[in-house]
Image (cartoon, rainbow, N blue to C red):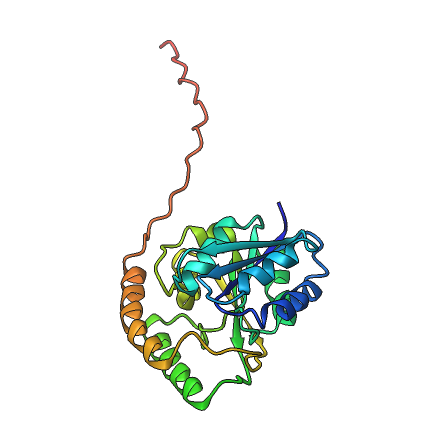
Length: 253
């Protein structure tokens, strides 16, 4: 068992992954018992080979491989299921999420005083994306926030920290990673938010475009709204055995 597991979904990120792993190790230096899990989501480049070569000198590094590309949520889910840590942090494999922000996610969750908090969601400031992507994201987040009322302005940020068992109790569906704050709140957990920085992609190109995000987002949003309305509202509590009450003594007339 480890305290913190860092899960990285990665597809065709061979030129970014080594420097990203170096930065993660530096950011997690205060947590000596951490692990890093790279989930290769059907890459067609050398991502898996690069990570495999690094494992020999990094015993805390692990590699999972999908036999086909299944998407970011599937990669995150596979990584969380394999994780040993009670606290899991995620960040994108393209290097746009600075690993230096990771302590903002796991530090509050390791504090026993925050036992009721299920997730700490990063929210990007100063985004280093194209104007079209920023505008599309702003529009999508506005619609999502209006319908779900989840108090999150940026659910597309890959930087998130959460409790492993709570995550695995959520209903799984593709693209669920964009709705984690709402899903955690649905299950009764408190949701925390922290501002995080953002930077340009190091190499390669995005695996998504605005049209793809928009088309699947409409269906997903309606599905999540349905899940929130249909949540289980009753919460059980186990009764303790009643104390034995001695029978009333009869008195003679």
